Length: 260
View 1 (cartoon, rainbow, N blue to C red):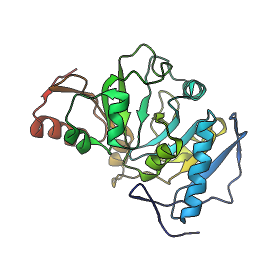
View 2: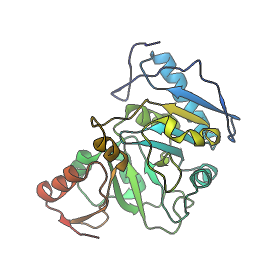
View 3: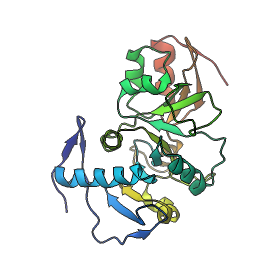
View 4: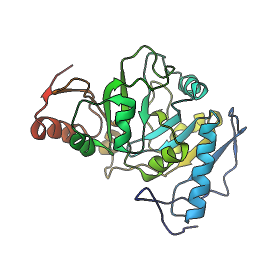
């Protein structure tokens, strides 16, 4: 059933409830994984989906959400339980950090020591880029313990940004897949994880307009750029937005590229 688009934080979001899908047993505090699909709904239904997903997160849960690049797996940054569950679900090594996801550019400065002009930050975010800075003192010590730097994301997704606002706390974010497996562009590609998740938000197949090899390139995820040193940058992961990011940093803001 298709319904009118609803707005949130200046963006457009639509959702379609999958009434025919069964609930999937999970290990969450909610006891059941709820599968929801994003596509055109009214404001009331939008609010219900956001409330259900944010309630799962606030309860220490882990959810799967579509971002502007690939499907992500998220918990609250403040939830030690949720962070631990992400590592356990993915089989992820503890020395591999999680990024944090905020809803507005202005929030980046709260959680990290920003070294670039706000005008540059606003050119990079929201978008398919993870900016890396020295972590701020307010971050949960259980997130990436022992690491000086932290990656920050603002996906170009009104649903994700509304979700962060609804939670009132940044999300700890990583890809929705098992470690050493390909990133996922649809919820069916990580179905083996459904039973461990509290909520699965189905946004359909994430497409960047390509086919074949271009679709596989979409699995590269966000471009990860280290901006922790004033006047320079280094690309940690090329990702999907590599050329545009380097052009902006090097040619327009005249930052020196450090190759690592």
